[in-house]
Image 1 (cartoon, rainbow, N blue to C red):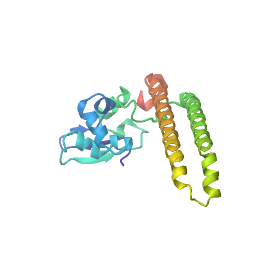
Image 2: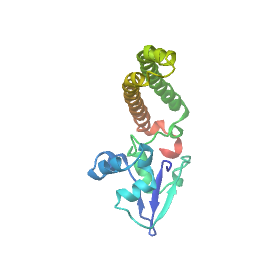
Image 3: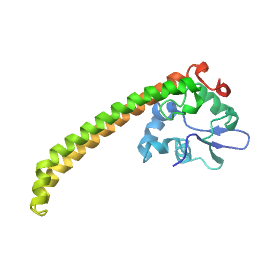
Image 4: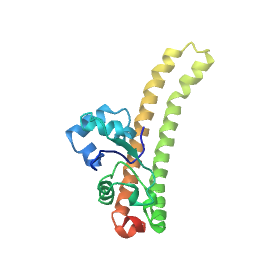
Length: 192
């Protein structure tokens, strides 16, 4: 797994990387999402090479130090400033301190909502298992088939609710960050 942001640089200065539009608004991006094992892989070198039809060569670079735009090619700096990575990453260090506090408060509310949904789903899971789990323990495991019949769909429902709540939290977190970052006054001086 590569870090955000990753790119491939070629002699002559050509730079390849993936934006949210590449990943979520193109046919090739749809194929890439199917191809990758994890959303974390969507911003990596393997994804870039695959997206551009298994290109060869070039130097694989990734940077996590956003303290200065000088750490990135101009093409990537422009893409960051233009919000082309909305949905792919959140970089709170790019926000001035007062706006970062606002971001933390807003995303904290969204995280609390996710945690409520998670706890509720987990409680429902345990509630569904309660009677068969007690019977399973009491019989020394002889009711395993009955236990699994209840446990497997209950776990599937828990995972469905958890994944949905997690996706909603991530969407809200991304929106909060990129909406704040879209105003140059909210950015640290180097990124205005």
